[in-house]
Length: 427
Image (cartoon, rainbow, N blue to C red; front, side, top):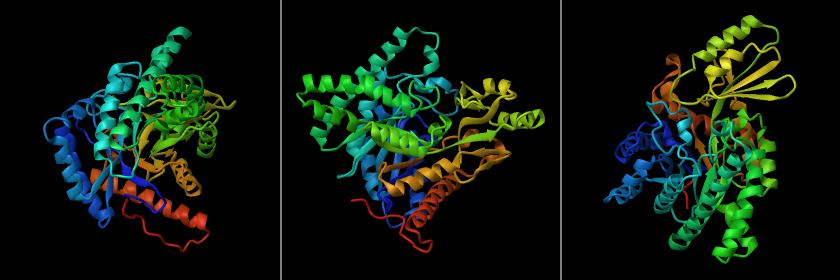
């Protein structure tokens, strides 16, 4: 849906199982028309589309893409963003660090992303930019034991692929008139996981290589080449992930803006957190039991620990972290588990919901991005007592976002009684 704040809001369909196009389309047909009827009966409603590599190939077979376009038109739906991070299976199997495979050193990742861009250019309404979130280049623990030359090789190969992608996106814009940006998504233990690492990558690798290639191969001026790189390779700001880096939203956005790096999409998501009381072994033991309820075999649930000195310790998964919950100088834990947005309490644990509220407040002050996407994909792996009807849960997520936006609008306006419509028709 298109908000009066100038933002498109939807949820990411990576929450639905299905790796084939047939399965994906069935899920879209099941969930989106009823949701639109409830939340946006008189306005167009947006989709955050996730296609696996297999589904991205299948949608281009036969008349599948045209049939989907016709269905979107008939249902008054539109696609403005895609999730191109998970390449393969994402449900009902062990994903863990395989979610980063193939990484950005490979032709497979490049070809998959180019294919998604061409699909999105076909689906995207006129006059609207499209975005595709993607992996943070690679997975850092794969290279922990490597020498610097190996890590530099990964950065170099990833940069080459992304520069090739920029050239493809420029050609796509010439062919179709559609502008597509790829949004790198920093993540815990990703090769890029915080604003500092993102900025270093842009300044030391992506911009120099991109300007050189676009100037020499495409004949762009160096200023135009730099602008092309910065416009077509942006950042996906996943609120959960930046909370795990203990970065305050305002500070992270300010750093990225100062570096000229654009935010292509904000993913609205919450992590689990708790304070660790000093010298209280009993309470820490109870917290360990509560955290253990969230241990499961599908996804990585990295834990980032803050200590008394302000230092961060990273654990690659919850099972490893639980062995260290009694560390005397540890003061806080945050865990990578995309819990529902609409509540802050989880059986003695809390969520980073306040970071989402702050992001939604900040977007009232400046247009950080046009794309907002709820990304709570863990419904089927939540503890049993937290599982609810999926359709109802998606609706509650979006309603919470709309209500929070309205509250922050009123706070910014200084008038609690002011009321605005949630949606208007996209141009």
